[in-house]
Image (tube, rainbow, N blue to C red; front, top):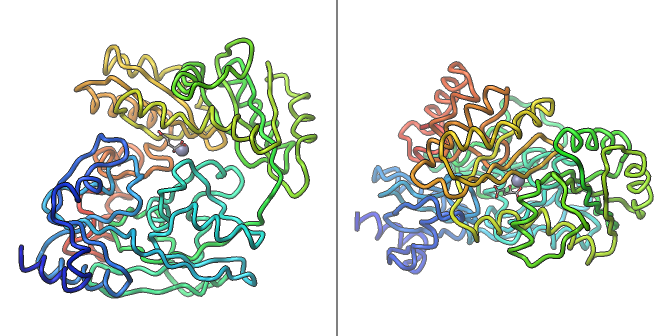
Length: 451
Ligand code: 2HG
Ligand code: ZN
């Protein structure tokens, strides 16, 4: 192995091959602290050519690679299995000028979402995807996992922003499709194939993204409702009545208590309610009046507070956005990111506490998520050694309600064994044939997505 490490050092520079345990540690544990692994070395290439040479060298030595961006994933997909080379793409930080004619931009895989947003906004443009991990999550990882976030209700997931890609295949060859053509029907769409492939088919080194108009005025409402059925009724009203709707999020009473205690936040209302919906409108001109009008007409609204100044907007968003951080401060959760058709959502929320209690008596369940997509983040604390039993019970429940076992976080290592709950045997067999064709030696992210 020291031969391989020497070769890798020659390719990327010895200072970018980390073998010291302390230096590797931050790459070998995931953000949740639930997934740990060990790697032969962390290798940090500086450009696409170096990525290609690293992949070739590892393939020749028969050593697998685990690919990592900002290490903000929540399903163990970027955590090394053991004995592999951890390919960290954090140095691929080049950004091209914003293409004002096409309304697109090309960025290196290691550019964070926040930097890309800051790059686009002075031009009156914005990135269609936004999420709480924006300061660390990188665009390569966001595309590889087809991340969703807070604005999917308006702009779709990461794959909907994607117009082109540069990637290194398992044999070291480089495919480049960065022209960003609005129309291009020349056969298999490799760009879209790699979105959501979780690093199992190729290593994404650059992405080209469609940008959306920057909408400078925002109005946010935090709405108290009687439960999930009322939240869904409000969503339907908001979707039909608000052309400017840019987010529709859900959380419950115990989630609010937790984030308030963690962040020392004031109570949003004089009374507590069973459930809360965050609605956001974004537009060129102040959308507050249309938001107030829709709230005034909806019988689902028990109480509401609205803000349109930057401080007020941030204050209202904090009740929803700090759930992840508050849960993490309380312990290491089992995270299940699921979606169901909206007609199944209320039934699922009703069933979840009993299902979790059956698998892990005494565990604490926190449920919140993206109402617009029927996407719940089910976080289970204090599951002890019953983590896997909790995952199995919740994912089976979701499958029985025609849902997906991964809505926006990906499958990673955490859910690879459960893929059959969301995909048919025929689909999984087709996916395995694609994997076999593109990575016959199984060099890229073995154990991720396909167990
Ligand atoms: C969110 O929507 C993220 O805030 C994280 O997807 C979800 O912590 C989670 O489970
Ligand atoms: Zn989410």
